[in-house]
Image 1 (tube, one colour):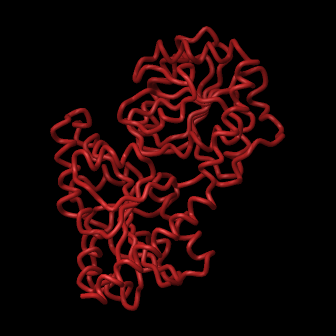
Image 2 (image 1 turned 180 degrees about the horizontal axis):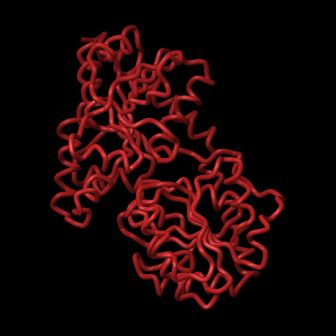
Image 3 (image 1 turned 60 degrees about the horizontal axis):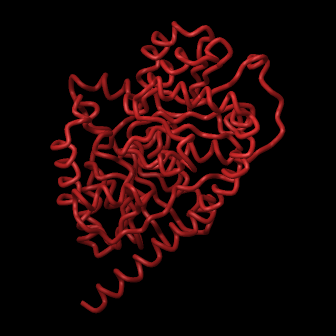
Length: 383
């Protein structure tokens, strides 16, 4: 098949949407499909089957958008026409301007369309300091549905959690719940421990340095921990709040390590850490948490009602009260004080992660695309 993947956001693989898009693109190409990619990533210009558009101009807010490490595509009818010409199917990553324009053009051309759901309302409203405004968040979901998702032939949801949230506030969709999947690279292995971790208890969190990820909660929890003097925090990621988080961490005896790691280095760190903490308040699917437990780490996860990650907890010792640093400190101390129980729980989690196998999930994504394409083609032919 000729499949056109439309990405309003694409660039460095430092955010969940870009990672999900590139994983799908690579997988479909490996399966023999021709994949055309429409995106605003200038680094892709000139590469085969990449159709690069310009970015939106936000005027005085351009510096803020740049600070957040993403570029957002500007619709270009000429580029989209070239990308869609002869295509069998279109997959849209998010419901922004480029994706919306591609949707309208695909429907006019009777091309089957699927769309991913990778953007919670709070991912938008947090930039407006309104992430806790229920009315505004419900409005965003209703807007997404009325202007975008009700017109697509199938919607990919990474978790049942986000499907439930969106269909409650937006509307019913033809739904396919498929995890973005965990690569088999992430597994337990014997690796040499970083000399910087000698005599330390390594507590790790992987997540973009942004408000909704709640790094501050973990920093404050370590300050309250009985093990504060020996805990080495590692924040794997990147993002606009790096300097603020570094400043907040000055009260800790051991300065946290802030760094964006390659996949191979990430596997090494996951296999030498002692505990994984996921304090994020807002999350559709925390693949980073699944990668950690796939390497044998025991997680402590925020019980936020706006995060799907809480469903990865096997019992209450793997959860802490959302945004409560003292409660998190107690759970960190519990696991560091009970190494035998932690080892047993690690084994339980290794059995749990099989359902998120990357290749299986990508096979299901391909089947979704083929099924939607066939159904749409039959509908068009039957007139």
